[in-house]
Length: 206
Image 1 (cartoon, rainbow, N blue to C red):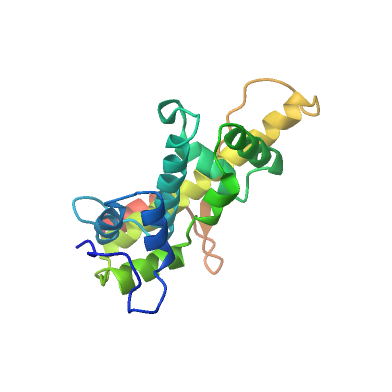
Image 2: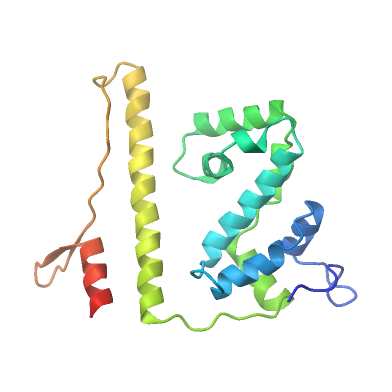
């Protein structure tokens, strides 16, 4: 249930950061949405890290809506990744920051309003007074599969970006490329080897 006010929580203690940012950008209803997504109401549960990314994307989108950029023609999720992903090159991040700045987005102020998963957890537990029920084995498998898939996709994307940069500089041969990432699990005591995703599928069927 949405809190009736996002003023100071106990008469003197400052509001938590998530509540302050929600008010600053007029993101009414986002608190309830975070709660619903964390508890998995009507959809798959989201981790605190994914919720933090989702929250920050909403902040970035709100900032873009108040700028000269068209939200319809702007891929907010990609921009957010380019701004925050540690695997992105400094050149890509700088180009994105300059583009946003030229179009009236105070990128320094926006990124300072981004929150961590710890902030999301504090907001949900201490501000909204909700706790997540213990995840079932099936949900734990789904969460692990999703995290690994995201890491694999990011590894492929970063590798492709790096190779294309080298191609533009004439360092490696030109041509269309498609990077494939294959994750394998090896039990060192037995020597048994499995595909990560096949192992997870087998575990889900047991």
